[in-house]
Image 1 (tube, helix red, strand yellow):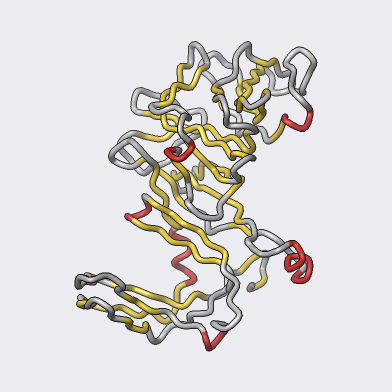
Image 2: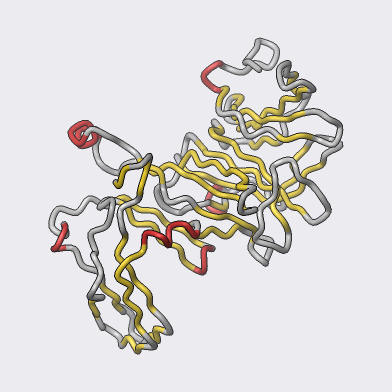
Length: 296
């Protein structure tokens, strides 16, 4: 696998192979992210022995005006279940997802559709047309993501990179830049029109000091503090939000200068004009995670 004069791909526009999948014809397949002028490409390669790879005549999918496709990902999802399946799995009860990281926009976008195994083509339900209508994994800071199939728990897990909102000078001063977001389980929504994401269940092992509110009326203009938890958590610069039971996710980088340690607080507020009924609110402090035998 390499850019050549025949495929007219610049070496700098040839990167990030996907997880391979095995077709029913006995050939392995893998995608490479690329572009030709402003056309984004998912170049398809095939191999019988996983050593010698041949470029397919046509890309799995391409789209005009989208620019360089980084970190492509291509995987199957079940129509009617949150259970994940192996990347090579295919059946009548499966849809496929093609995700790309658009270098020009620095966001991750995805399409849901069908995979024609005979023609080796991806047919999206809704094509890349108006960039404002693209489906995104996350509507904040989230890029260069990748999924994998966890066969131990039969789930597909999404990992994503969260880049900085601070200046380069600040990054150099603190000595690091960019982190990974919390791993997320990912599956197809019942509507079939979008994906759903939720933090992996293992994150619940880090919960401590639970605060549970029963039904409470939040009147217009109310501001209520949630006492009993530590507002300043493991990383003070990240907020990950999961709305609509995981249908809309927003990751933000924040760099507080006043709300630090004991000066950080968590509130529930209603800035609307009508009263809001809270049916249930649960909050926890977060313990430090054990990474490579050390707590961080």
